[in-house]
Length: 451
Image (tube, rainbow, N blue to C red; front, side, top):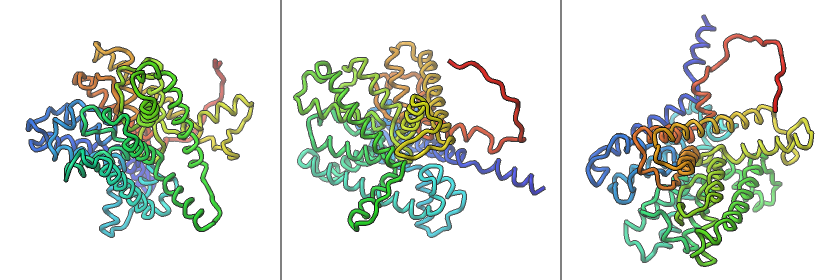
């Protein structure tokens, strides 16, 4: 009897299912809100468009079927802002924060859910983690707001100036990609401060809260002259992020120097190249016409969208640490080593298996969605479809212009892709799988040829 109760509890509580359900509930709530008369200038919005916009906001993607600045009222823009702030930090983070403010007890299930999303040891001190996430988010977004506010001084005035600054600061930190400008940030291509502010916000949002928390501890230790300890996770994330940004920016400049960047000043070429590779990793802003890019540059951006941000961040993709683990594994095989080592540490087999499973599932999702989109969107070119799907899966929001032309069936495919990209294909697999395998047995081994 007791065994049946335990089995029932295992079936009932699966963190992955609750996390996925939370995002789905937020998307449906956002869809209803956006369909209300006060949300749009026309007083109405089609269900498919509202669902697409809500999914794009909650999944911090930024793909749009309607111009955010012209189609939505101020109320509609605020709803979108709330949705991508909610989606960027995670549903469970907000619900746990509410419990903390109300001085309610944090249940063991809530601790496990936070652990799934942010920190492997979060269950030990989830209150401190949630508090720090909230403090980091508010501090960074408000700092970004004030920096943008003063940068736009004289261009926008009064409440409009503050709202423009706050909207774009939150959108950048959450890697959401929503903009209140019709052509994103193309008008500010040569503005160093706007580029710098947005880049810092995007990178900070994409590093992950674990890295931000550890960075604070490092700064405190330096100030107080204490010994500094940097975790393997933080080392890997920072190194992979720096390599991706620097190498990709240089490669982008080389590829596009006399093509799409041909008519720009030297300063604009450097700013545009760096900004575009930063935002391609999950943010979704742009300061240049992407349709003018060559195929090599498009392929580079697609690769960056696939990698994405880091675990426990506001961004999507397979994550920087996953690519780091896969690279380390391949390096170990080339060196004929049995163990996989990074920074004088050996990685557990479970982590390596998880990394390859994630990459495999991600490729499967992307190619399935692309194949279906080829069927439902026959007029689109191959590179446009792949770019759209990789953008949706990586929760990036960049497009080569086919988003507004998507059929209803195509929108559904992209919606599902954005949802899977935000919660993660591995998390979705956990949500759909059994809580525990039935029976304990093994079959006899037999080998097959590989390669």
